[in-house]
Every structure is written in C-alpha cells, then in structure tokens.
Image (cartoon, one colour):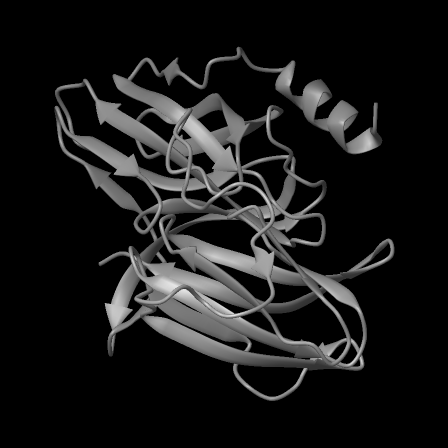
Length: 262
C-alpha cells in the first residue's frame, strides 16, 4: 500500500466513518464528500450538508483538515458571464435551515494538499461554528467528476482520442485548436471555459508523439507527430478539470477546462 493511502486511512481512524456528526448545539453535518484529485493537484474541494436543529441561529466560520495546510470557506459567483471563486467569512444558519455545499456553489477549499485525494479513501474534516463549536466529520473521496456522494459525474468512459473527421451532422458548441511544441501548449489561454451540456471539441497537433488526459471525463487522446487528432465530449460535470500531457512516466499540466452551470 502506498504511503498516501496509508496516511489517509490513518487519519480517518480518528473519527467515525459515514461523514455524519451532530453537535450538542443542534447542528448536524451530513453527506460529507470530496472529489479525487490528480497526482499533481495542490488544492482539493470538500462538500457537505449542514442543518441547524437548534432553536437559535448559528454560523459556520471555518474549517480545517490534516490533509491540507489550510482550509477555508469559498463560493462561486458569476461576474461578466464568467464564474469566479471567492472566499466567504462565514455562512449563517437560521433555526431549522439546511445549507448544502455542492459543486458550483459553496464549498470547503483545501489548500496545499499534503497527499493526493484518491477515490475510495477518506479523511477527517473539522468545521467550526460560533455556538456549536468544533464538529468533526469524515469526508469520503468520490471520483474526480462526482456530483455528490455516490453520484457519478459526466463524461464518457474509455479513450476519447480519435483521428479523422466528425460524423456528418454532428453539432459542436465549442471547438478549440490546440498545438503542442516542446512539451508545452503554444499560445492560447491556460483556462478554457464552456457551459454545462455543451458539446466540446479539442483539435490537436503536436511535434512529437504524446498522450493527453482530460481528468474527470476519462478522456485520453493519442497524438502522432504531424498528424491531427481530436477529443470530443459533452460537458456534463461542472467544475475545473486539468488537462495534462503524458510522455512515458512524466505528467505535465497543459491547461484547465472550466465547466460552468447553465
């Protein structure tokens, strides 16, 4: 067993499994989960649901986890038709209210990961409330494109790369021409943005043989030197997904694909 897996299992032993905890103040935290991360990822994200069963209002003010150097509360906002992530100082909980931290909205940002988050493992997460105090839960790690605990994300399985032309009548909402030279993406943005439900196509060229991985969609595209290749898929899962170049045992990040909710 690898060290990272042992580390996660060791940490999970400090709190009960299942991702549910209830504080004396009436706050109950359920459905605690996180997406798996690529090997080179520095940050991760955790989601959960919290209900205030008490008779007084409370406020979630922070979070921490031994798997990351720092954790904080974040949300997504739309600005100039672009989704942006912003930190929040706290989340108010009225009596009887339930707040859901989910993809595309509120979430716990795990910054400076100390280990890769691998599907099937779990890790402890501590939430801090003004009245309920510290509540310890366990976050289960789902797939990299999961939309909830036990809910699969978008994307087709298998190899997405192919050579040749698209079938007649195929509709593509976004087409990106991408060239790789010297193991790097030439020109263009380091973040490509599309909307949930849109058909996306990457048209590739490269100066040497390589393989491209679109994480979260199980897409792998094999590129031969001087020969065009393409990756075509439907943007089903929302979030920020890395696209990496693989050559032998090495892995290099090329850019990120951001899929915004409609």
